[in-house]
Amino acid sequence: MNSSKPLEIWKTKTKKGCVRKVLDDTIKLSAIEILSENTSDSYIYTAPQPFKSLSITLPIIVLIIKNMNKYFSFRISILDDKRCRRTFRISNFQVKKKPTIFI
Image (tube, rainbow, N blue to C red; front, side, top):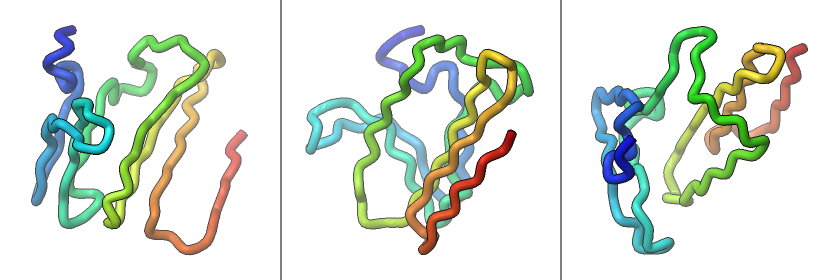
């Protein structure tokens, strides 16, 4: 994979928005910018098949999310060591907290 093409193994979906690589002024690093009028209209994804994965084996994931004073939502699905898919959804447009545990 070429580091100058961060979306090389990812697929993008845009209806009324864009997905692009930008230089962030705050952190002074390259970032992926996803813009859309609706949070479900633009997104990136990879490994959409049920038991496919990116083969990341580290026990920690770190995301840096910049507050743009706009609504956002993201979802991460993780396939654990028992091949059970765990999904985390985070957004800033719901007022009450709703943690749900699926066993």
